[in-house]
Image (cartoon, rainbow, N blue to C red):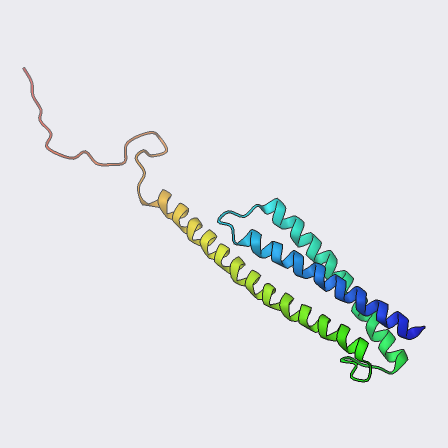
Length: 149
């Protein structure tokens, strides 16, 4: 019965990691866009956080079951469990690669945002046509003629 519990936990862990991969792919797709939809990205982020908590829970259960069965991953003594574990490690590796891509895309968007902020801040600081009082700041140019008739 305990072996069946471990099998069930490994399958749930594998399924959860598959869902995480799908969420990470969606996050990459959203971050590849020129303009990010913050609401949509927040929904993806919340789903990812919830799923990571689920994965942590299943991993803790797996470790407890392994302890009681005196087994440990990668389960070389059990071909079926070893197969599940290989799938899990492959999904973890894929998720890690996607997470690295997400980090790179976020860094790119942050650089763009910083550059835009600097541009906006500098645009107002260089020259303004009118002062706060509504007077022209630019000195008169050209020759001044005083003509009286």
